[in-house]
Length: 522
Ligand code: 3NM
Ligand code: MG
Image (cartoon, rainbow, N blue to C red):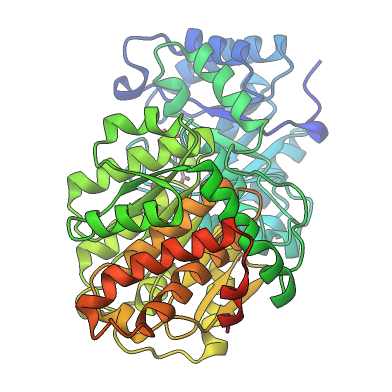
């Protein structure tokens, strides 16, 4: 009774590794047995070193275990070993035999086989589909010490792109992804790699070290299987969100601010050295409860208190980056909203690296930045920035809308590009806001504190993250306009305290249900 190759469950795909760095002192066959008992749905024997005779022996042992659990066994690269052990199929890398030749050999032997292919690019995916592969392994998602000679690190964005290509050629082609997948990123990878229109998502994740290197492979597998089967905790709404227009925004924004004032949500800021004080003051004025902690050891505890997190790259170092990644993962694990402010992202090579590492390290519900920063987030070519200030804009409004909505669809989050006109999108809905005042550009940290304000609102408005961002932007920018118009404000220095007063005043007006402040919305 071989498992039926037409109804293969690819959801948790174990790839074996017998190297001491991964397997440690454990026994390979025993480790696979535990993983199968824990619930892996398919197993690939990947062994680059054993002699053929030993390989067949191992394959036979694994096959016995797999058959007992109706789990297919796939052999990496070696058709001869697959035939000799009567395994269900082979997996072929780009340097192995091509799919059509392998199919011909199995046919000649009178054997049906599952033939999988590794693909790293759209072109490779297209070829494997046309050559008749039964499933694709798409990678390398994240850099991994498990495989040294990886060609391309494609991230979730590259994975999504290849899935789109596969969908056009072979809509029903099963796909798994591979490379650096573990319990911290698995749900996010499945979520973020799905095509924007929901037409295709990954069928499973292929894993080596997160199971093979685990002290308790069975327990590790059980945990991973649970994660594969459930959406990430930061996805709060499965429903289509309502359309936003001027009328609906004006109707609901004051109620959101009122709700924030009543709830006083915790807003955890891991922000730069420059803006600690003003960011904390802004959070208090709008009705949130700030905590300024850069200590990653506190992040899991703080995340459990139900607030939101700001990750601000303003004064970053490699240590700060590691702290940021650990913290975004702690919030992702419980679904706490996280905002990324990639300050000065395009200014230096180190910062460009930092943005990539952060985006590979966790899910950000909102990413906000000026044009240069968002273009760096987009990763489209080199963006050179001068310092961390906004610099000159080069895209027209339509160009900004196109870029922002495209990145929001790609990342499956909310993207805000600030500027004279702010453009904010969740990929489906895009809002342009023309409020604000030039003096916000003459003081330090106005962009950073807008990030704090958005995160604070996100803590209490989790269903509609775009609406949360819009509420915070309007409150923030209209407060700036009102401050600048006050007679006692003569320049940036007098502007700052009056700006705080106006943030507080708008909050109080919302509590009193006095909505006249919204007449300023542009
Ligand atoms: N193939 P881990 S990456 C076997 O990109 C393999 O084709 C890859 O190991 C590819 O789950 C990889 O420990 C190793 O990161 C994946
Ligand atoms: Mg290979």
